[in-house]
Length: 128
Image 1: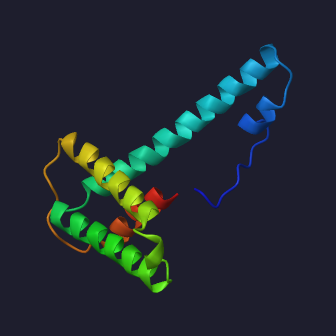
Image 2: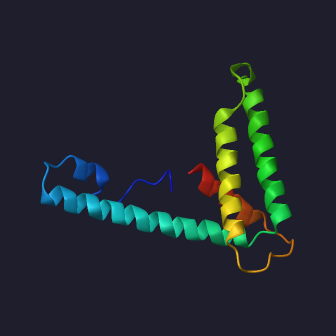
């Protein structure tokens, strides 16, 4: 995720440093392919986390995270700077993603139960 640095050599940055040519194009295509595969894997994990949540519990958790972020923004003395735009953007992104996943779910919605660890993972993906 965000705190992990790429471990492989030959990524996008290294490919961009090469002179124009076939080798540069080959490395850029490989870097793009690797990135796409990683993003698809992460997206599948997020969809599985969302699908496992009862909608009311998931929305309640997301709202609580939003309000805690806004309160933290105000407690840090940044209230004078205006609304917490980054928090609002992240929350909007998460809601849109959850909506998109929910629209395409074919399985019945799960019953309410102890889902806190999964909800926490879902928000962790969003902040990365």
